[in-house]
Image 1 (cartoon, one colour):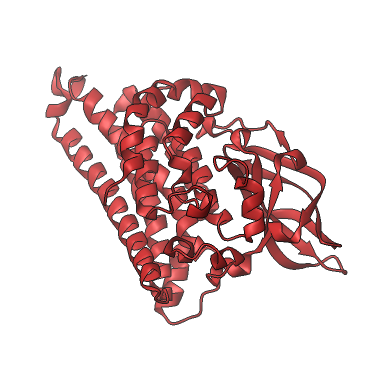
Image 2 (cartoon, rainbow, N blue to C red; image 1 turned 135 degrees about the horizontal axis):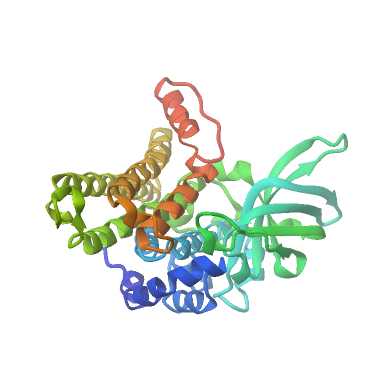
Length: 388
């Protein structure tokens, strides 16, 4: 499978790597980087062809994400999250897609999916208010996908929607000051009151049922793959990429260093270091192979017009969270065996270690919940979850 975007980003990687420290310090991906990735076509990979997108095989998208994440974790994370939103927008009614891309197909969308917003039905749509956290890359976005509950007459939630709102309707509250993924600018979005027309809403129930009004106009196989696979893999892919890139940096920089335990011998000659490299590389290889295998299988079903079996959907979630676990196991090995060299702030090993662990706390990486879902399915117990 050729990947033209992967080739297009290769010349950009040295510059992204050079800006990694300032990205971390400034707590936001530079506009220069976003513009370069936009020009390379990264953010159009999962965008409908009807609006200038490539509708590419999702495995190719995740490959690009891993490459970028290998030189800057924060940039890779923002690339993946912002880059997966065109896919979800493709599930919305066509009028909503036209609102965003009608005049500029390079318009970017951020998100915060937790259903903390409140929707009240009014004529023609809903009145929305709330505060949402962890909106990665929001400084570069002109629209936002956010989660909200429809409130009934007795103050109880009656539905869970993802709604689309323009930049004019929300404020960005700069609160992002954390230990890992510092450069993602994952700030809060605040809406006092905003009107959301019906066409800018999507029921989360439709995600898990593989239905959406956008599928009537975006009929390609890409939009028949489950949200629970496409989105969660977009969370794990950058983590695996961070660790894979860290491994390459580790081998390149640690090999000629001396170890006191070897009486001044080269680090590369230490059998414990050699075993560490073998273990770490095996973990990342296993993670990538399983992630790609499952997305390939899902996409093949969609291309053939076949119903996607629940067993495959559950296996995809099982391997997705395990990929995150494997990546963390690998980077912990590297961090520990690098010794004091891994403690200096700003070096690639230290930054990747912080970023990978920060990414692992995302709700999509709730390991025990995902594994329990797989176990339920294996025992023939019905599984109901929006992230499958």
